[in-house]
Amino acid sequence: QVHLVESGGGSVQAGGSLRLSCAASGYTYSRYYMAWFRQAPGTERGGVARFYSITGSTDYADSVKGRFTISQDNAKNTLYLQMNNLKPEETAMYYCAASYGLAPSIRRHKDFDYWGQGTQVTVSS
Image 1 (cartoon, rainbow, N blue to C red):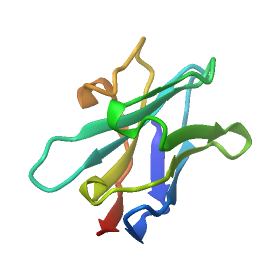
Image 2: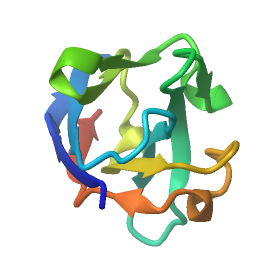
Image 3: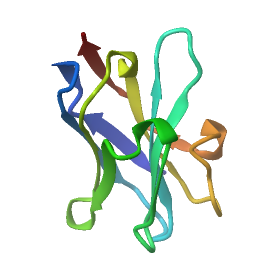
C-alpha cells in the first residue's frame, strides 16, 4: 500500500514561489508514476504535472509549463513541485498521487490509485 504525505503549502502573493513535497513509502515496484493534482472548491480535480520513475520523464498541464517543475529525490523517496510565478487562480488544495498503471494521464485523476491528504496553497493578489 503506497502512502503519500504532502507538505509545503502556504500563503504567497501573486508572482511568488512555493515548493511542495510529497514523502512516499510502501512502493512494491520500482516502476510507477507520480503526479500533482489540484482542486479548488466547486471545481474538478485537475492534473498539474506527472513524473515517471524509470526514465524521469515529465508531463505538465499547459497552464503551468515554464513555471512549475516536478522532480524526485530517490534517496529521500520524495516528490517535489517547484511552483514559480504563482497566480491567484491557482489557489487550491494540492494533492500528490501515484499509480502503477501503464500510462496514467494527468487529464484523468481516476487513473491514479493512491492519494495524499493534500496541502493548501493560497495565492493572494
